[in-house]
Amino acid sequence: MPIWTFVSLYRDDSILTYRIGRYRTDNDSLAGKRTVGFTSLITENQQTLFNHSDLGVLEAGVTALSMDLDFPLGVETLEAQTSRDPALVIIGDQVDVTAVLLAFDTKCPAWFEPTTKRLSMNDLKWLPFRVPPNYLDDFDNWTKAFVKTKFAWE
Image 1 (cartoon, one colour):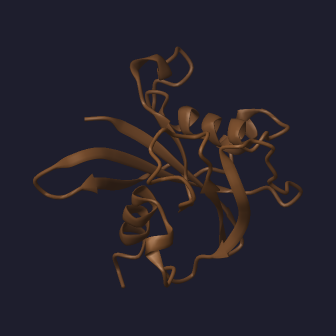
Image 2 (spheres, one colour):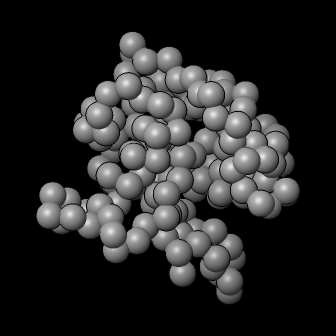
């Protein structure tokens, strides 16, 4: 079963969202859907001599975030702003689990305004995230699962 990192970028009480462009995936059902996460597949290659404590999971996720948003400073800057305890998000149902997400929260530095020139990301905007979004069908399946996990206490 694949294990992925799913890193969200927060500012105050809002989360950064974007629409998935057609250049991101061959799956047309995802194109145009809004997401709140930057993802990376976890492989054994993520573990290096410098990250034995988490097997490279945190670095893999933050690297995906940094690359997608063209973050001007090193990955270490974002790692310092990232939660250390990921939420576990199960994709699928109790019988058929298709993936597992390790979801991390990263606080956006006050001086950084995310922009992108990538065709795989469209319509970047900050979405208030104090309560679950009203219309979940606008989001991709992983974001839906993330939102349900995040607001499970309600």
